[in-house]
Amino acid sequence: MSRWVLHVDLDQFLAAVEMLRRPELRGRPVVVGGDGDPTKRGVVSTASYEARALGVGSGTPLRTAARRIPDAVFLPVDREHYEAISAEVMAALRSVVPVVEVLGWDEAFLAVESDDPEVVARQLQDRVRAATALECTVGIGRNRLQAKLANGFGKPAGVFRITGATWFEVLGDRPTDALWGIGAKTARKLAETGIVTVRQLAETDEAALAARFGPTNGPWLQRLAQGRDSATITGSPYRARSRGREVTYQEDLADWADVRRAVGTLARRVAAEIADGGPLAVRVVVKVRFVPFITVTHSRTLAEPSVDADAIEQAAFEALERFSPGRPVRLVGVRTELQR
Image (cartoon, rainbow, N blue to C red; front, side, top):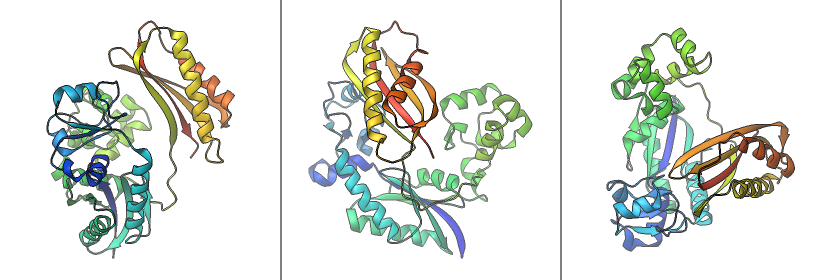
């Protein structure tokens, strides 16, 4: 039997869970985010497909969403309920395939040995549907990268396969930011050098990429464009790579001293959350969103891995010193990156 990687992603997860609780919402634009009040500052966590068709998606400011879809249904985030449903989904996946690498609430990689991975994919969909009444999409590939990207072509509730043989047929003419791991900023830098498609990136000289993007990142970008990924699937329990908190203020913080106090409070809150015998913090990242919507982050590496609140707070303050104050602030966040 052949070895495959399957990527399972629940369709419109938070919105779908809410529609299970409120069947009358099916077919309507549903937006989940913040405390459910679109007059307040905050961003969309998940939007139903009906809302996405009208220009609202994850990350859209709630107020913008309300302007675009005045008759949308806005609901608060119910973290505990979503975590419980997610656990049921992952249990359903493990009942079919034992090696499941959980990525978060709504997605996972699975290591599969089969001569017909589509059959396994349909079994997974049936098992998730039977356990939770939720729909999911399954991407199939020879590695994680191929499976992850295949998933996007299968949505919603479908199955799609990408292999090395079909990689360029499917992705060759697409922009570089279609690749998992390449964002808008890197895509712009690639475009500055004349590289705008996946095929062009795959065919670019590795030495030239290394010279422009660094000896590690340059070759890595080329491997992405060629559909290569050597990472293995692990069935170890899911462990978050970071832990953080952020606050969106309904009234701007005009005094930088208030921003500093907010950073200190959040740093200590995050430190308390990781002080439970889990992985240690190795880096502290501070996020500030200035008015109107300009987001800046700075970070500080800890002298040694720690969960000590004083050390984490001090690192957060040192990261904050790298900011240029002077503009009103609408959001403050602190995140710890955890030891792997």
